[in-house]
Image (cartoon, rainbow, N blue to C red; front, top):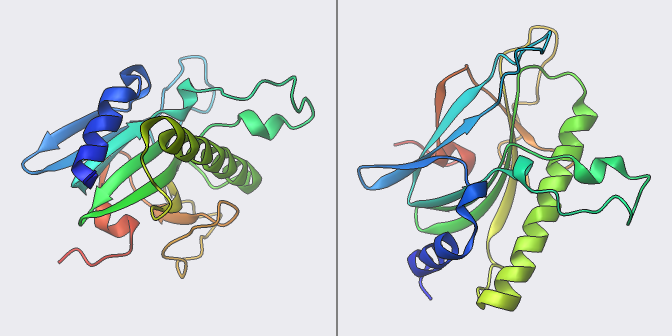
Length: 193
């Protein structure tokens, strides 16, 4: 199967109720990540929308809508059911990737970011297994990257030397603004030109 055929197959097989919004713009696709703002929240998030653009193909899964782990299995491991904002299955410049993405309005509670990245890794491991077992799709060559998007926080700094991360315990941090647009090429540390 070609990569385009794989994405067509996955789009048909995965329940669309768990998709984040994706729209086609010209010959490419963009993903819109959003964070719900609750009226009762005393500290509403400042990062509520981010558009990732420039994908050849993309399927974006809202992990908040998936809770695959039953707490009976490991009742003391509360971090297992943390969720990230998006799991992306993406084709960029003809190469396939998985991305675990999270939007944060501040950089407090860094351990929480790690738990969310680890939960995303668990989902991707599960997806790879079922894609192989039930759809005969081989994803062993697909790289997985972990990304946290955050607004500027004068109290904290992030390590700008990390450009890509395949380690959920050390995600790459990208500073963005609310309603920002972010290139898919930046996710894989490729030049925009």
